[in-house]
Image 1 (spheres, chains in turn cyan, brown, orange):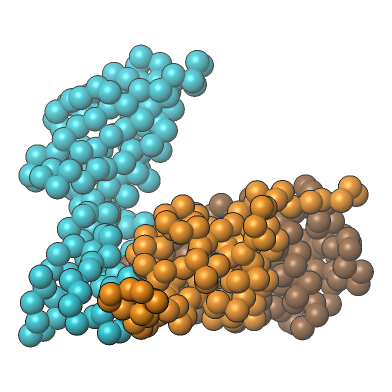
Image 2 (tube, rainbow over the protein chains, first blue to last red; image 1 turned 180 degrees about the vertical axis):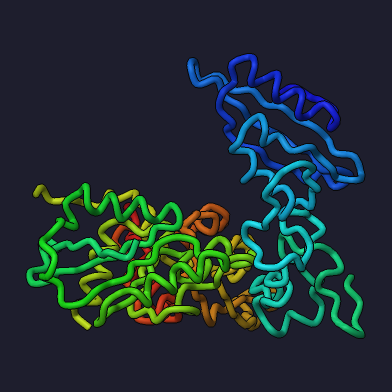
Length: 157
Length: 133
Length: 116
């Protein structure tokens, strides 16, 4: 994996293309909690060789568009913007892919509350038997962060 | 987009279906598998007495209007079949804020085929169920 | 057309052996799509010669929503008592999404006979 700074992102991918990597496989984000990592996978179609290019975004979460290098990057950049909150600079199409409005937190960030996981009663929350409920510890479903389930007037242990 | 394909089903005499297959995700491969395995046999148009909208795959909120448009364009009498966990209830994406929790929220569904994905045979069982209804 | 046979190891149905189930809730909690529901109660049994009664969980309800189930098999894998198992066959289509929710009566029929 080739690590580059966010400032060198577009230049690095242009270089990859010049080196024969003619196909953009995909771009995706990874929420590293303290930062967002963006990874692009490019392929040389003549011998099916793949390379990964990675960059870690600064706190401004800004990245230059590479649609002038790989036209197909537009779709993934729209994903990065909508789902990871990345501000893409210099791309013509900024429309969200799945959401109909701009409202709501980026869906793929670990800090984003998934309403369905909070509002749907977790079947694993209840101890199987009612009479054992009194002394059980409260359990939390996987993927539901501490604090998501705090009810008004109660404490989440 | 809204011209249905016509099939007969060997093993279920008299069942002729006009299917508009809306493949939105991986379940669609099982529809293709049903055709290549000979479970669905392409037939002449006009044999079917109703049109079937077969929805397979994840329906996002963004895609829902297109599915509704396909339903509205389908000639009467028309019947809806939901194929696979995503179309049935949202399936693995039940907690995603951008995914419909079942296609029956926007179009009427008569038969729900379970599976993730369902086997091609399950599609035939579902269509048989629909025909018997 | 040659007869097509669904392979016996196909991931088609999940069966339950209620006698083996201890209501431990592990499957319910591990299910990624929250499609298993389980209810039980406890009662005390004093065995002959035992100094103290022991608490036994009695399974009241066990449902799997096959409308949401993604047939990943995690429940089958995590069950410490092999109370859940794959079996061959096809789950039936239903006329409503709720019709795909199956309880103990149905799940026990899908539990494979021993040796399979």
